[in-house]
Length: 200
Image (cartoon, rainbow, N blue to C red; front, side, top):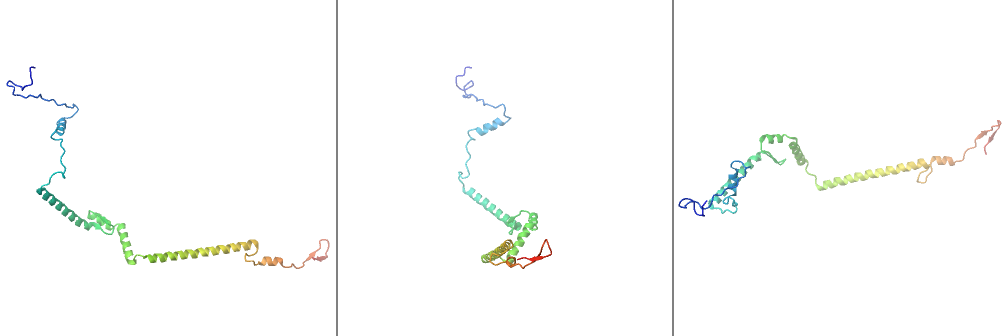
């Protein structure tokens, strides 16, 4: 069109570079392209400095200290308030008075309370007491075991006596003594007559 690379206009005072036409995605909504262009612009793609990278001034340091002190004070006050709703026995923290009252009337809390009172009343058993109880238990078990062994041996002795007719100690029973004694002579009637003969 006769342009030779100089400025536009009669006196060549216009722009030299041509106007760039941006590429627009037809699927994007209204304003989305402008937003993308804003975030991808060279002046906006620079990473924002971290808090540790920024040089802190005296004014900023004082402001930060005031904020930290105020936050610490708030946390201390909250802890003091929550102490009212804290159960030392169960080691549980509640935020509401209703929840704390429900916990105080619960079975778990009362059970722990009774157990603590019982331990304080009777005291914890010492190691010597536990060893003494364990020794007594072992002695009772040994006595019971000895009694069982004695009963078993007596039963076995009685069974041998009933089975063989004599005891294992070498003594003879009444039945064995009676069987070895001499039988008396008994008159036996004859089958063929009235005469009776004595058994020789």
